[in-house]
Image 1 (cartoon, helix red, strand yellow):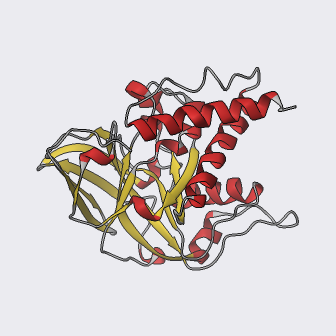
Image 2 (tube, helix red, strand yellow):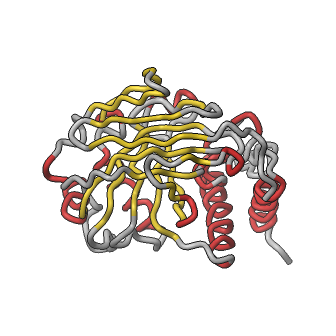
Image 3 (cartoon, rainbow, N blue to C red):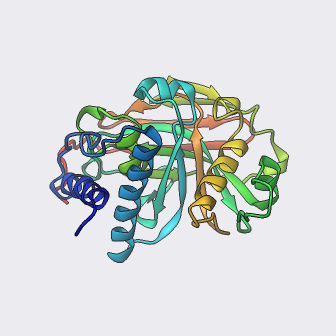
Length: 279
């Protein structure tokens, strides 16, 4: 007999998969992932995410890293949640810098500026070792890059709670990495200032300290979280460490640029075509 939890996970995954396949947002999945304990509901949501990640890998997608979401209190306030989450990054989510993204690839895109951390060695936890720290992240980092994350939601109207966004791969869409490679020990990532513009108009600002105190602290949180699940961060992976400022809706034909002091600049444009692609 199929357990109730397996039915919940399968039903939520099927709803999200249908939204992707049809190119139309769906109802929230929190009405399916119901639990008296929030911790249990979050665990079920990650099981939904894992099921969908496994299906993507089975279909030929390659995992290239992870993303941390909801690290910035202003983004948490935008979405009505109070804790960070994480998702998977795949090879087909990467967009070249200064490229034009086809809006037909997305449903309800928003954009935010981040610092990407590229690992040079594995970040692995052990039951006998202390939790991974920000200093451990520094030691494991090969370089950092400015980044733009194009977040998206399969949930209609971005009507999401923490369970919805976790199940939906942390509301992942696409991402853009800048060309500037910076050594992690050459800049204080907690002190960096970020300005994001849309066609020259400032639309979002923030700083490194707005990202769980520091992007390094955010990556340490992620390393411990995924390590506890037996899915550690590996050398060569890209980690999007979390928004430095509020996310902004994407408009057709717009160009967004982010400048992060000491790290660099990254830009991306969007097509003027709002017609959604059937997947």
